[in-house]
Length: 253
Image (cartoon, rainbow, N blue to C red; front, top):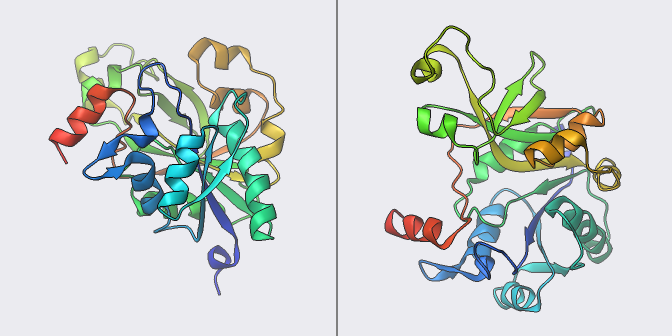
């Protein structure tokens, strides 16, 4: 038996009802199924145990109705990571086991690929990985300049050095229209994996200066010395942040 199959993984999908740009987003219907159900059904293709972590009874009931596992969590959590940590405690109590690693699956990416989750799981073959995430190579200037698509710098060990909404690195002496041709840029795919013992620790960290500047939670972990392992995926990530995003998704299934 391989080390990968010996390890126990759990997927947790944070899902809030309140959203300034798209209230009720997890329950939006996409080709006959709610968004949260589509995320859940994709996640269970790669993970034996998956939980939705919510703070809303409507989402709790919807997940229960389609037979999914769900944990009710506090309304006061400031991030999906904090919600994952509480849901993990509920899941381990219900399942009567302890997991080796936790995968935080975004609740607004209904067509996430199981291969992406398998790739993230592979980061935890050894014991040294604390946190893991995915990136994808940028192939167009529009993505490169979009501040909503954070860029990632990776070191020679395959670890994230920095995440930024700005274009990094800056190519000195090269016209910006040619940057994608002249350098390999990566955008962040918002999936995370956490080693079991690391997750509760990072939820206790105070927000950092870099995190506040970029509004990117992962910078808090880097500033506090945690290493983030990175794997490169070929699959595009399509998050639904607004009703317009949903319309585009429906128009291009």
